[in-house]
Image 1 (cartoon, rainbow, N blue to C red):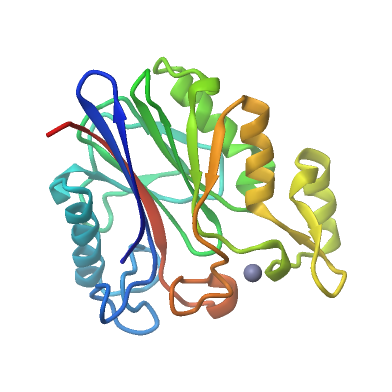
Image 2 (image 1 turned 90 degrees about the vertical axis):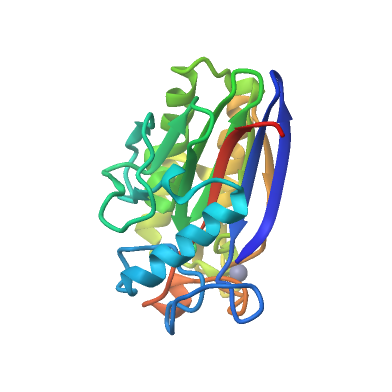
Length: 257
Ligand SMILES: [Zn+2]
């Protein structure tokens, strides 16, 4: 289920571990059945709760933390930020509600953002030892949920110019045509995200918009993973499949071994 893994040594004998997940499968793991096969992490999509718990526990194991150390959100397509002092665990129903960004300075709490075309974003300020996980679609881009998350990190001592960000797998501009009024609304606040689909319709490149926002903040951004809609074997895509699972990104700070 893990498609990318990034480890970073922080000062003071701490390391940050970040992973991005895909849909999994026979070879790469996951407990869910169609249309959530195999590594669905979302509890709000209609999957069997026991399968979701199994997949979330596998994600915890991949990070090297107990399931009880995980913190999940119930994404809201808003700009709410939770400063996380206590994990939620992996059981459906315990997710932090009305937030799309989780921020913490606590070693040992793993923050998770879920998505299926939207962008999972992982952030770390290595020096301040503050991390965040953010879910961002077109509404989040318009509302600047990323800026809200960074403000939450700053409140814990982070500095935007020190941030390292990873933008995970998401739908690309060519696959994401939108109604002209939505494109026009985004063009007002984040013009870098507005592109043309191959047929000339207005379209959105969410990660281009987020990269521009991160550049404004002075942060370093890495793009990881390709287009969710174009890789049915590797990623869930809501736009492609409708009823489907959620992949995501997770980040945790741990005492270095
Ligand atoms: Zn695409």
